[in-house]
Length: 409
Image (tube, rainbow, N blue to C red; front, top):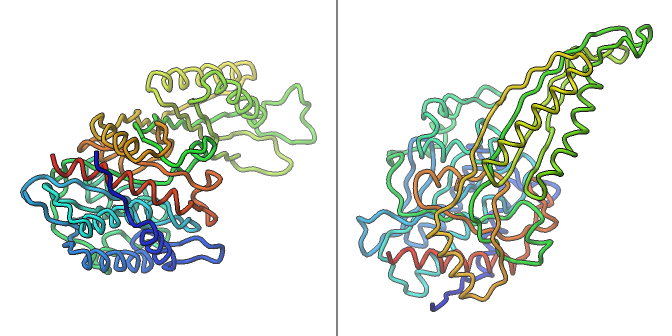
């Protein structure tokens, strides 16, 4: 195939200009969803899109779509995109790279005179991060129908300001239909982990997203005086939890390297320095590439925890909080990315996404895939998040060539 190349310097300059909006002291970004900073970032992007000959429109949850017409403009569009909102102390590339890579693709199409049969769009999804409003990714969730529009509109931040109020204030809301047809969706993103960098590879061909299982665990003991209760007579909920936590690492080793387990939250009810813990709640996050294996992991966790609780005489309750099945990406879209990276001659590997992305939700709506590039030190959701300009360029080259192939279908 004849390959095309993006303008890497222009892409990098766009990334750096966007990073001046909501810049933080340590070199990161703070553009919380539907904030003044988020609006300013969108306005900058919209100006660039207008210069590239694109039209702009919003839907009812504030998702922004920039569109370049196709020769057969009635056909469903090929869509690229990601998000421009960040964590409170976030980086300059998480989400932003996908949006601005999409813009660079359009700029290249214009410059190189490529006649796209299908229309092409760039999506900026609302509130991907979930840092200001929950749940995360509700822009793409509402679009795909997995979350009710009113539920998202009613969501409030810590100050009691609702999404609906923000959309009214920013006027970033419109009439585009939710769940309208897409031919396909491509999302370029930083990996947010260390695998590509550790392997010395600039591009990851993303084949899907891993399964996630969240458990809420409550262990009950007996509160008692720390100085008067003999050790042999105690019902210490925290010591029981400590034993459970230690066993999780051993359990996870049986599912290496794809199995992951995390305790992200732990709370001692009515805690006091000189009181034995009477009730402890904690969370367990299980992840694996395969649904069958995550089911086995969950069962093993339940069995191990119950055994420890029975041994110590501690009542135990385990509730499944959330289960997200593994999401395979579309074979044809993945193949298009693989053909593009091979034609360009860039070193690469297949990879499964460990993080949640809008693409995971879009995969239930239309043929979808992603392109990963490495981030320095595998670091993300951090002001020090960084990528190499050469990697940014190569990832965009892959996106460009994969999308051009799809546009001619």
